[in-house]
Structures are given as C-alpha cells and as structure tokens.
Image (cartoon, rainbow, N blue to C red; front, top):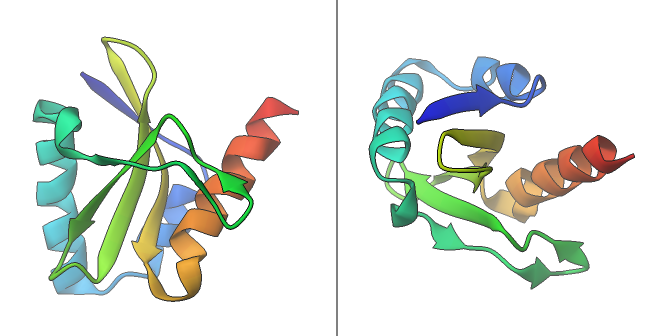
Length: 100
C-alpha cells in the first residue's frame, strides 16, 4: 500500500520531538502493512470522521488519523496528541477542506 500524507501533516510531524518521531516511523510502517489494526472513528462532537481510523502510539499519548482510500492507498489526515481532541479537529478540518 502507498501512504499519502495530507500536506499539513508535515507541520504535525515537525511539532514532535526525536523519540516520538522514531516511534511514528515505526507506526507508519505498521499502518502500511496492516491498516485494519486501526480503530474506526465515527461522528463525535459534531465531527463526522466516519470512514477514518485511528491508531495509538507512544504509550497511547499520540494518535494517527487515517483513511483507507482503496486497496492501494492510505491517506494520513492528522498526527498528534489526543489532548483536547486537537488531532481529531485537525483531521476533520482537513477532510472538510478537501471536499470543497
């Protein structure tokens, strides 16, 4: 599977420090091999993330929100801490902007 990153995900990654980035690299490889390991997201706090999946890393402090587009492609919408649901808000905002 190919992994596509939303352009703003680069900013998400830039905010991470060294050891978190190395764990993220491992998690991205894991997503590429077995995307079905992600847990489904739905409609939460008026954010419809149906069709997206989340996966935890770094002691469940960080999340990767992604979507399986087809049998060949996965898009990563957002990476970050779950605090204040910022990672989900970013993913939702990015998905909505794609649809316009």
